[in-house]
Amino acid sequence: MTGHGESATKPDQAIVRFGTTAQADQAAEAQRLVNQTMQLILDRIKATGIPAEHITTVGLSLSPLYADGKYSSSTKAPRVAGYRAHNTVQVQVDDIEQVGGVLDAGVAAGANQIEDVTFQLKNDTPQRQEAFERQWQEHAPRRKRLLRRWACN
Image 1 (cartoon, helix red, strand yellow):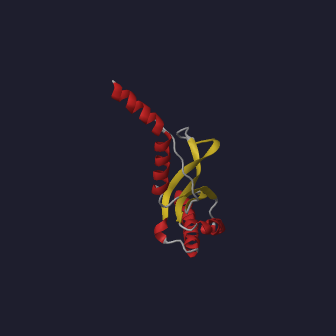
Image 2: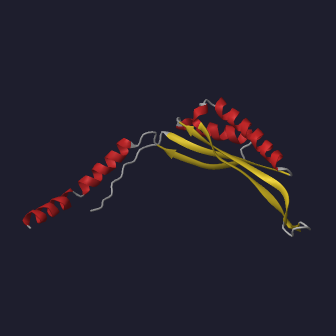
Image 3: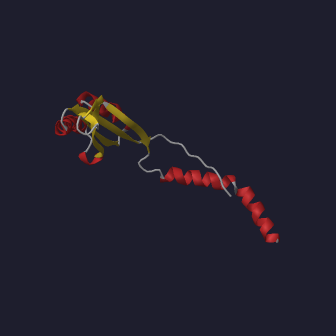
């Protein structure tokens, strides 16, 4: 037997993901630039009152950029024209009223990507229990019919 139950309430927490990207001729320089910008972003976010333990790096990448139509004369492979570095952080915001300020702080500090804003509950157990109970009640008549049928056999 399957069922469906729902429960709705207002979120009390948000998860914000910021990213910043930098390009440079050398890999080390691209990484330095993205690290420098990300440090500014982290400082600004912390200044809004977000604790450091609520900020986590969730993505870091460094990749080559190839010159269009240009190949190395010795290997005939595409020629690397530079490098792109990217860093993503995730910020847990426990006061929904703070989300706008956190977004503004990150963008003002140099975040050039807002990758995601998710609203959720810090503890969704009561809502899950309520949804389960609604689903259970929805199927009470069918359960009784099935039990009577099985008891007769």
